[in-house]
Length: 330
Figure 1: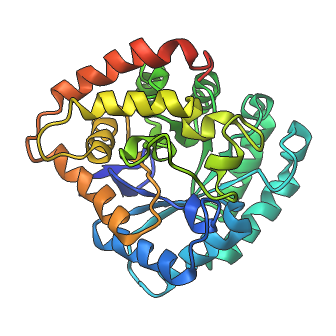
Figure 2: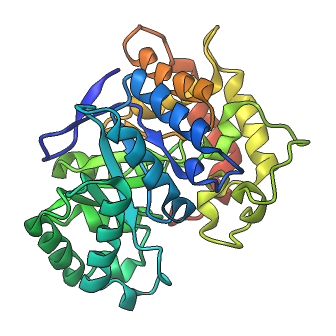
């Protein structure tokens, strides 16, 4: 597994990480043993970045990661958590006092004195643009509550505003074959500023797994059922904001361009990880098989697999099927 420098920190993280939203049971039920097994399978496969948030399962994801890492001294894994969704997402809630309370809770959940990396969890643009935001975050670093901080964003404009801040370590942004706009400005700006990029929702909530059909149904407590049109939170978080049926058509087109023996999710993860400026791709996994397969996609970065036809298909499919319907701010 390739390990890549985490910007200005002394840490390195794997080219393929693990997103753990699903371990909070927001994608249907995942029991504790299953969650711990996914973490173990990922770590054993060379994954050294776990991404979580204080609201995933109301802290369950953080607590599970804390339990797992407590049993693996010297694990070398960076835990990137997120904060900011425990209150209504209005600028007046992003205060120094709330930052302290949220990070203290995450420290307890994870069982650590200092959080490796804390990201603001898709806050309003006014928060990203405020000097007070970064003053408060710098205080947490100075106090030893957090080692570094970044921002998870919804739009390219938000990403560019955060990248301009001198102490931002990383940007987390949706990037996949259905969401190409970050390639134009965000990734070059991040490279120039030595800011890491975590590519989230890389498989478009499973649309790029190649397993779904028009007959696929999701559980009622799965956001792919209840948030298809942005009913609960930003629509872009579910299927990358793409219409489900259109996404199925696009996925089939991409699958037709795969090298022999390579799966659609493996090619997708490797393609994203190979984009200049991407530090880590953070797919989720609900099973050990998914976790191992995701990690194994990193092998395509080094084994000489030719993804040229797939890369060309990504551009063609985006231009022909998706570009016109993607929100211009994404």
